[in-house]
Length: 161
Image (tube, rainbow, N blue to C red; front, side, top):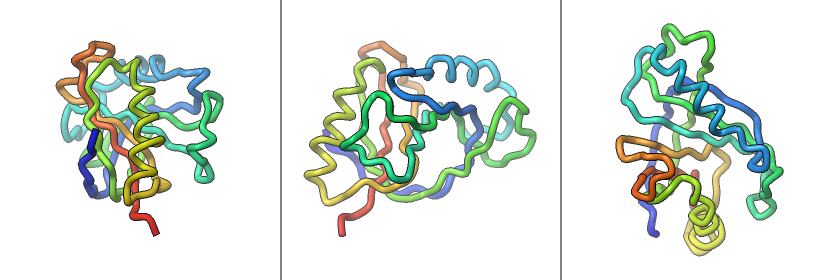
């Protein structure tokens, strides 16, 4: 699994967030709540859904475990923050360099892909993890737990020094 290395500019996002852990995973409830209000978001740039993970600044992924807390977002990209639904929040998403992995498979089989990215690809690459949000883009080919589902995994990186 070889990623594309891509640089992106800052993005404007509108969505909902929650603080959670993998052992107390509330992703399904977050997305259910977001989807019920999504139609009220103005200035959408496209129909892609964006799942964002914001980890604490001092997090060492070698020590990441199911009880590690992080912030999870369900969001969509917008061109402007006009008329934000009161049930939603805004997120100025920083630009930067990312390793983009194409994931094909059921959403509930994601764990082995993350183990490969952080346990094999990243240590063997010329990059190191950067302290910016991680995210997944779920476009037209996303089908949840269907084995033919596709999504893009964006991992923030920088050149090793």
